[in-house]
Image (cartoon, rainbow, N blue to C red; front, side, top):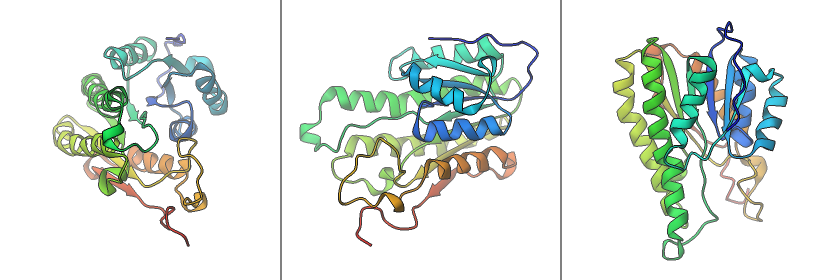
Length: 248
């Protein structure tokens, strides 16, 4: 884990973004940097995180890099501790990190792959939400945003475990929403359809031009961030204009 040294006097709002090295996480990080946030960028690849930090234009003391595998038992604790050690506060947590293998029938699913999806897609956001909320409660404000997937609703074949983790993440967010608002915190989940990222391989069935862009998801994050606490939506669904998996 690499931790930059905080300047101490910087009172900018602080955001943690998981999976910040590419795709949605990078797009969200760039939007938050433009909005004046200091960042805690978390992922497993130093090279990708360095590229994200460079694109934000933020100096190292305002863009902390944390190399962490959130699927491990102590990963979430290490991330929250690093953010608090550097900045002393957390104003926003974006639980974006997630993983799935190529579509695999459940009878052929490797147990290790199923375990990693459950750990990274569900357990990590739950633990991070609890830890971040504890830090936010002291200040009486803060926002936590979980990134789910339309797979939770559509439940496509070959994605049974992935769909289950994302469906559970939506249910967790809905239930925790009521608890968090009593403490002055905002909690929401974004449910995007297919997003054009490197995680989705090319194939003849997909029209990538019909997919959502990472910028679309980043804008949804900012809408939640900027919404008043009393009018914060618990769920934001993003649908492509067309079904990318059907011929047009």
